[in-house]
Image (cartoon, rainbow, N blue to C red; front, side):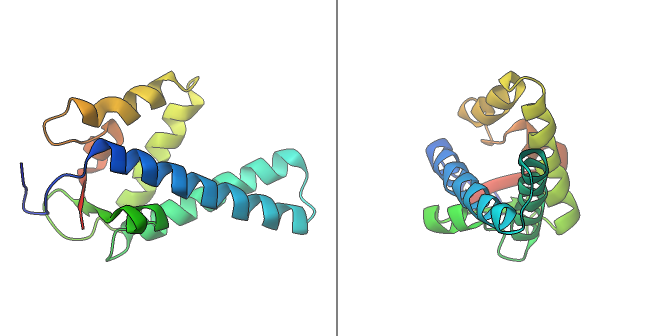
Length: 135
């Protein structure tokens, strides 16, 4: 199946990209937080804010790629074609963040949703009308 934006990315590519990006955000956030002398709770908040900046700016950019997506050769696009934009990309990450706060199970359902969705969209993709496609 192909769309105006490209062929939907395989679920496993999305999953590996999330792991790569999560490690990057966590390691950089932890190192910077320690260097700045942030306490544990403040460091956790800092890492989450870093995540918003990372995913919002990179997924919302013209390329639509985080480092993990670059490695896996996939990108986030608007379902009508073209870049998603920073605002929708921030909302997309906010959805994942909120679903994760709800005991994690809703986030697992969201992450698995592309396995049975005909457009391979997760719930957070549907909210902002984004697709993850092969680059």
